[in-house]
Image 1 (cartoon, rainbow, N blue to C red):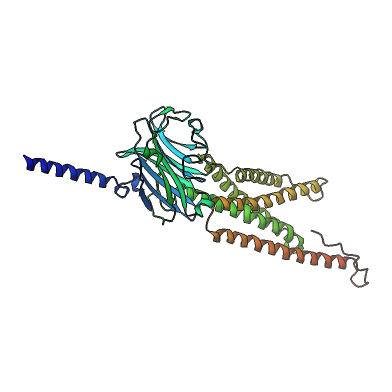
Image 2: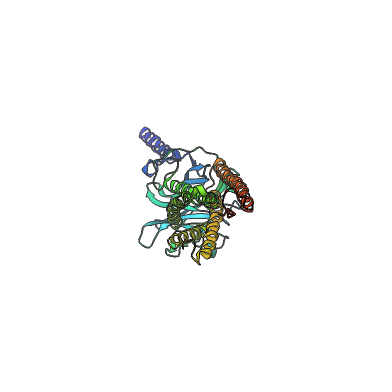
Length: 403
């Protein structure tokens, strides 16, 4: 009898060890076999975090696993940019909505009072948020754009929590969590010094370049090429090549072809940017967005103005030129400005910003050189036109060279 009891105890003890081992983050699999560079067994509330930090675009991909105290409870994970506690945390909270489906909402927790725990946009961008029920509880997925000043430190303050219920799912009124030791100890530092791991994509994917990041990169390339490169080239062509009589009317067709191509590419990039903005649940780059919308509107006016261009001898041609040149230079300045704003948002490797600066510097140098050459040509033509009748050519004065 004693031996049977001994074996029962040994078996039970072994099962407990096996269960404890199976609950480590390394033994867990995320949906779709998405891979993360690191995982952490968090020290309280039986919680786990899988994550990857991509330093090239300052994106942190996370999968947080915890068990709420009740089926209608909530789980939360977030980053505190300014302190180590709950106050100031930019949190992601997963709970069941009024239809019983899991949803993820953003909460900007400004203080420790319950009244301040309300749904609100975060101070940084969040996307690809979702949650799922798993055997170990509930898992929350998200991708986060870590601010440059936090990424430079190599670590962030993380906070996690679980709560019993949500009193109002529409407004996200969370019932307060327990006040025991584990709930007060659910905080720590998360190192961002990780290497990327390729994943299979999907909402919870952690490694490599996810679909949204690809869209952001494509959006950036399209707009840099259109507003930031092709439009300046078109402006250079119009200002300088038309000054040479031998380039007429070739300069006009080159100018129109360059600007129409830039407009088509720019509209594609602009549309992608509007789509990305509508998908952003936590943040909006208002300045970048407003300039982009202004560029689209001004460029559209320029394209339509092409069909209303008066003839050279028309009395309104002077005013059309003023309008066309003014709007064109506005597009030129705003386009370059917005490319730099976009680079600051995407935060790519430094070589990409340096490459664009070099391109703009080269175009500026070319414009300066052509400006000098054009003035030299104009002055020479003007000098020739002032010479009196020489008695040999049979011609009178030549007209000054004009553009």
